[in-house]
Image 1 (tube, rainbow, N blue to C red):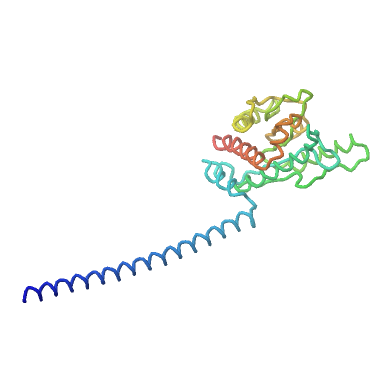
Image 2: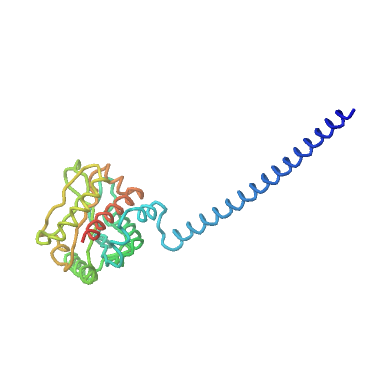
Length: 268
Protein backbone atom coordinates (compact mmCIF):
# COMPACT_ATOMS: atom_id res chain seq x y z
CA UNK A 1 0.00 0.00 0.00
CA UNK A 2 2.87 2.36 0.92
CA UNK A 3 4.62 1.48 -2.36
CA UNK A 4 1.49 2.39 -4.28
CA UNK A 5 1.25 5.76 -2.51
CA UNK A 6 4.91 6.41 -3.32
CA UNK A 7 4.32 5.48 -6.95
CA UNK A 8 1.30 7.78 -7.07
CA UNK A 9 3.32 10.59 -5.53
CA UNK A 10 6.19 10.09 -8.01
CA UNK A 11 3.76 10.05 -10.89
CA UNK A 12 2.12 13.28 -9.67
CA UNK A 13 5.57 14.90 -9.34
CA UNK A 14 6.45 13.93 -12.91
CA UNK A 15 3.16 15.33 -14.19
CA UNK A 16 3.76 18.56 -12.26
CA UNK A 17 7.26 18.91 -13.70
CA UNK A 18 5.98 18.31 -17.21
CA UNK A 19 3.37 21.02 -16.75
CA UNK A 20 6.02 23.44 -15.52
CA UNK A 21 8.26 22.57 -18.47
CA UNK A 22 5.34 22.97 -20.84
CA UNK A 23 4.50 26.37 -19.38
CA UNK A 24 8.15 27.45 -19.62
CA UNK A 25 8.34 26.24 -23.23
CA UNK A 26 5.15 28.12 -24.05
CA UNK A 27 6.56 31.29 -22.50
CA UNK A 28 9.78 30.91 -24.47
CA UNK A 29 7.82 30.36 -27.68
CA UNK A 30 5.72 33.47 -27.05
CA UNK A 31 8.86 35.47 -26.26
CA UNK A 32 10.53 34.26 -29.45
CA UNK A 33 7.51 35.31 -31.48
CA UNK A 34 7.56 38.75 -29.91
CA UNK A 35 11.28 39.14 -30.61
CA UNK A 36 10.72 38.01 -34.21
CA UNK A 37 7.95 40.58 -34.66
CA UNK A 38 10.19 43.32 -33.29
CA UNK A 39 13.04 42.22 -35.57
CA UNK A 40 10.75 42.28 -38.61
CA UNK A 41 9.47 45.72 -37.64
CA UNK A 42 13.00 47.07 -37.20
CA UNK A 43 14.15 45.53 -40.50
CA UNK A 44 11.17 47.05 -42.29
CA UNK A 45 11.93 50.45 -40.79
CA UNK A 46 15.60 50.22 -41.78
CA UNK A 47 14.64 49.17 -45.30
CA UNK A 48 12.16 52.05 -45.55
CA UNK A 49 14.69 54.61 -44.31
CA UNK A 50 17.37 53.22 -46.64
CA UNK A 51 15.11 53.33 -49.67
CA UNK A 52 13.94 56.80 -48.71
CA UNK A 53 17.52 57.99 -48.43
CA UNK A 54 18.56 56.46 -51.72
CA UNK A 55 15.63 57.60 -53.82
CA UNK A 56 14.48 60.67 -51.95
CA UNK A 57 17.83 62.32 -51.34
CA UNK A 58 20.58 61.04 -53.59
CA UNK A 59 18.49 59.14 -56.16
CA UNK A 60 21.18 56.47 -56.14
CA UNK A 61 20.07 52.97 -57.04
CA UNK A 62 20.76 50.28 -54.45
CA UNK A 63 23.20 48.57 -56.82
CA UNK A 64 25.09 51.81 -57.49
CA UNK A 65 25.33 52.64 -53.78
CA UNK A 66 26.45 49.12 -52.87
CA UNK A 67 29.07 48.98 -55.64
CA UNK A 68 30.44 52.43 -54.81
CA UNK A 69 30.70 51.63 -51.10
CA UNK A 70 32.20 48.19 -51.64
CA UNK A 71 34.82 49.15 -54.23
CA UNK A 72 38.11 49.60 -52.32
CA UNK A 73 39.53 53.12 -52.24
CA UNK A 74 36.84 54.87 -54.29
CA UNK A 75 35.54 57.16 -51.55
CA UNK A 76 38.93 58.16 -50.13
CA UNK A 77 40.58 58.51 -53.54
CA UNK A 78 37.99 60.87 -55.00
CA UNK A 79 36.97 62.84 -51.90
CA UNK A 80 36.75 66.58 -52.71
CA UNK A 81 37.92 66.07 -56.30
CA UNK A 82 36.18 68.43 -58.73
CA UNK A 83 35.04 66.56 -61.83
CA UNK A 84 33.50 68.14 -64.92
CA UNK A 85 31.07 65.77 -66.64
CA UNK A 86 30.16 66.82 -70.16
CA UNK A 87 27.34 64.99 -71.91
CA UNK A 88 28.31 65.47 -75.55
CA UNK A 89 26.06 67.38 -77.97
CA UNK A 90 22.54 68.48 -76.98
CA UNK A 91 19.89 70.96 -78.06
CA UNK A 92 20.04 71.65 -81.79
CA UNK A 93 22.99 69.26 -82.07
CA UNK A 94 21.78 65.65 -81.87
CA UNK A 95 25.22 64.14 -82.41
CA UNK A 96 25.29 60.79 -84.18
CA UNK A 97 22.03 59.07 -85.08
CA UNK A 98 21.93 55.37 -84.30
CA UNK A 99 21.02 52.44 -86.48
CA UNK A 100 17.64 52.39 -84.72
CA UNK A 101 17.34 56.20 -84.79
CA UNK A 102 18.38 56.81 -81.18
CA UNK A 103 20.28 60.08 -80.67
CA UNK A 104 23.79 60.39 -79.28
CA UNK A 105 22.80 63.44 -77.20
CA UNK A 106 20.22 61.36 -75.29
CA UNK A 107 22.59 58.45 -74.64
CA UNK A 108 25.38 60.71 -73.41
CA UNK A 109 23.06 62.62 -71.07
CA UNK A 110 21.65 59.44 -69.53
CA UNK A 111 25.11 58.00 -68.82
CA UNK A 112 26.45 61.35 -67.60
CA UNK A 113 23.62 61.69 -65.09
CA UNK A 114 24.32 58.22 -63.71
CA UNK A 115 28.02 59.03 -63.51
CA UNK A 116 27.16 62.24 -61.65
CA UNK A 117 25.29 60.28 -58.96
CA UNK A 118 28.19 57.88 -58.50
CA UNK A 119 30.77 60.67 -58.30
CA UNK A 120 28.74 62.55 -55.68
CA UNK A 121 28.36 59.34 -53.72
CA UNK A 122 32.16 58.98 -53.81
CA UNK A 123 32.62 62.48 -52.37
CA UNK A 124 33.37 64.45 -55.54
CA UNK A 125 32.29 67.95 -56.44
CA UNK A 126 30.62 67.54 -59.82
CA UNK A 127 30.27 70.22 -62.46
CA UNK A 128 27.60 69.07 -64.90
CA UNK A 129 28.15 70.91 -68.19
CA UNK A 130 24.56 70.15 -69.10
CA UNK A 131 21.83 68.24 -67.28
CA UNK A 132 19.05 68.85 -69.80
CA UNK A 133 18.69 68.63 -73.58
CA UNK A 134 20.32 71.94 -74.45
CA UNK A 135 23.26 73.57 -76.21
CA UNK A 136 25.06 76.79 -75.34
CA UNK A 137 25.33 78.58 -78.66
CA UNK A 138 23.23 81.57 -79.67
CA UNK A 139 24.26 82.20 -83.28
CA UNK A 140 21.95 81.57 -86.22
CA UNK A 141 24.80 79.96 -88.13
CA UNK A 142 25.15 76.35 -86.96
CA UNK A 143 28.95 76.30 -87.25
CA UNK A 144 29.24 79.49 -85.19
CA UNK A 145 26.74 78.17 -82.70
CA UNK A 146 28.81 75.00 -82.26
CA UNK A 147 31.95 77.05 -81.64
CA UNK A 148 30.13 79.07 -78.99
CA UNK A 149 28.83 75.89 -77.44
CA UNK A 150 32.27 74.29 -77.15
CA UNK A 151 33.84 77.48 -75.80
CA UNK A 152 31.19 77.66 -73.09
CA UNK A 153 31.78 74.05 -72.07
CA UNK A 154 35.52 74.48 -71.56
CA UNK A 155 34.99 77.74 -69.69
CA UNK A 156 32.42 76.21 -67.32
CA UNK A 157 34.85 73.41 -66.48
CA UNK A 158 37.82 75.76 -66.00
CA UNK A 159 38.34 75.03 -62.28
CA UNK A 160 37.77 71.26 -62.47
CA UNK A 161 40.55 68.77 -61.69
CA UNK A 162 39.51 66.46 -64.50
CA UNK A 163 37.22 66.83 -67.52
CA UNK A 164 35.17 63.86 -68.77
CA UNK A 165 33.57 64.34 -72.16
CA UNK A 166 31.02 61.57 -72.78
CA UNK A 167 30.23 60.59 -76.37
CA UNK A 168 28.91 57.70 -78.46
CA UNK A 169 30.87 56.64 -81.51
CA UNK A 170 29.60 56.12 -85.05
CA UNK A 171 31.19 54.55 -88.13
CA UNK A 172 30.03 53.54 -91.64
CA UNK A 173 31.15 49.97 -90.91
CA UNK A 174 28.30 48.99 -88.58
CA UNK A 175 30.11 45.94 -87.30
CA UNK A 176 32.40 48.18 -85.24
CA UNK A 177 31.66 48.12 -81.51
CA UNK A 178 33.20 48.69 -78.10
CA UNK A 179 33.99 51.62 -75.82
CA UNK A 180 37.17 53.66 -76.32
CA UNK A 181 38.93 56.43 -74.42
CA UNK A 182 40.94 59.27 -75.98
CA UNK A 183 43.47 61.62 -74.38
CA UNK A 184 45.72 64.42 -75.63
CA UNK A 185 49.06 63.12 -76.86
CA UNK A 186 50.97 65.70 -74.81
CA UNK A 187 49.29 64.81 -71.52
CA UNK A 188 51.09 61.99 -69.69
CA UNK A 189 48.57 62.18 -66.84
CA UNK A 190 45.74 61.99 -69.35
CA UNK A 191 47.31 58.91 -70.90
CA UNK A 192 47.55 57.15 -67.54
CA UNK A 193 43.95 57.92 -66.57
CA UNK A 194 42.68 57.00 -70.04
CA UNK A 195 44.37 53.61 -69.91
CA UNK A 196 42.87 52.87 -66.48
CA UNK A 197 39.38 53.90 -67.57
CA UNK A 198 39.78 51.87 -70.76
CA UNK A 199 40.79 48.85 -68.70
CA UNK A 200 37.60 49.14 -66.63
CA UNK A 201 35.39 49.70 -69.68
CA UNK A 202 36.86 46.60 -71.32
CA UNK A 203 35.32 44.59 -68.49
CA UNK A 204 31.87 45.83 -69.56
CA UNK A 205 32.00 46.14 -73.35
CA UNK A 206 32.02 43.08 -75.59
CA UNK A 207 35.12 44.20 -77.50
CA UNK A 208 38.41 45.09 -75.83
CA UNK A 209 39.93 48.30 -77.14
CA UNK A 210 42.97 50.39 -76.24
CA UNK A 211 43.11 54.04 -75.15
CA UNK A 212 44.37 56.33 -77.93
CA UNK A 213 46.08 59.70 -78.18
CA UNK A 214 44.31 62.44 -80.13
CA UNK A 215 45.25 66.01 -80.97
CA UNK A 216 42.21 67.10 -82.94
CA UNK A 217 39.33 66.88 -80.44
CA UNK A 218 38.44 70.41 -79.30
CA UNK A 219 37.93 69.47 -75.65
CA UNK A 220 41.29 67.71 -75.44
CA UNK A 221 43.08 70.68 -77.03
CA UNK A 222 41.39 73.52 -75.17
CA UNK A 223 41.09 72.32 -71.58
CA UNK A 224 43.68 73.19 -68.95
CA UNK A 225 43.29 70.01 -66.87
CA UNK A 226 43.37 66.25 -67.40
CA UNK A 227 40.77 65.62 -70.08
CA UNK A 228 39.30 62.47 -71.56
CA UNK A 229 36.89 61.92 -74.40
CA UNK A 230 35.06 58.71 -73.62
CA UNK A 231 33.25 57.03 -76.50
CA UNK A 232 30.93 54.68 -74.61
CA UNK A 233 30.18 52.51 -77.65
CA UNK A 234 29.15 52.57 -81.30
CA UNK A 235 25.62 53.86 -81.71
CA UNK A 236 25.92 52.86 -85.37
CA UNK A 237 26.07 49.20 -84.32
CA UNK A 238 22.50 47.96 -83.89
CA UNK A 239 23.25 45.55 -81.05
CA UNK A 240 25.39 48.02 -79.12
CA UNK A 241 22.86 50.79 -79.71
CA UNK A 242 20.26 48.68 -77.88
CA UNK A 243 22.61 48.17 -74.97
CA UNK A 244 23.40 51.88 -74.78
CA UNK A 245 19.69 52.54 -74.33
CA UNK A 246 19.40 50.15 -71.38
CA UNK A 247 19.56 51.62 -67.90
CA UNK A 248 21.49 48.69 -66.44
CA UNK A 249 24.17 48.87 -69.15
CA UNK A 250 24.41 52.64 -68.70
CA UNK A 251 24.98 52.10 -64.97
CA UNK A 252 27.74 49.58 -65.66
CA UNK A 253 29.49 52.00 -68.02
CA UNK A 254 29.24 54.81 -65.47
CA UNK A 255 30.63 52.55 -62.75
CA UNK A 256 33.54 51.50 -64.99
CA UNK A 257 34.46 55.14 -65.62
CA UNK A 258 34.34 55.84 -61.88
CA UNK A 259 36.56 52.84 -61.10
CA UNK A 260 39.16 53.85 -63.66
CA UNK A 261 39.40 57.40 -62.34
CA UNK A 262 39.56 56.12 -58.77
CA UNK A 263 42.49 53.84 -59.56
CA UNK A 264 44.46 56.81 -60.87
CA UNK A 265 43.85 59.10 -57.89
CA UNK A 266 44.24 56.26 -55.41
CA UNK A 267 47.78 55.65 -56.69
CA UNK A 268 48.91 59.29 -56.85
